[in-house]
Length: 114
Image (cartoon, rainbow, N blue to C red; front, side, top):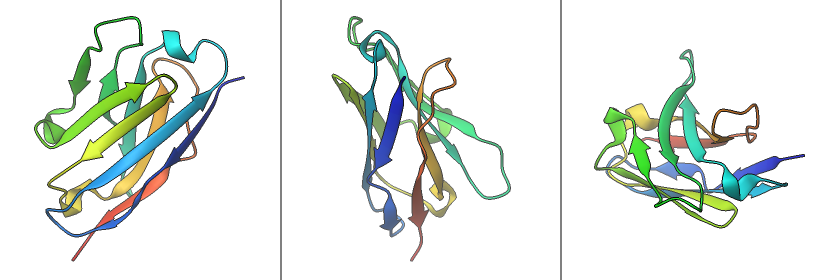
């Protein structure tokens, strides 16, 4: 059974930074891509970033609205989301996901407000 646990959310001011962490446990995690999604109040969950499995060349891709501001990385069973230049529109619950599976974390709240 795969489990994902996110941490690192909180409150940031516009222009500030936050870092999110996702620790995955269970078999096969290292051979799968990992991703971050987010869901703002009243909106559908949307893709944020994805990173390939450990055996690849660490290919990454990003949603257009975070390019140049957010960065995804991973270390063994932990995925990271480094968020800079945060804006109020980035306020959402952020979820970690094993790509193309039903495995999701419980989510961590990110609030950007002055």
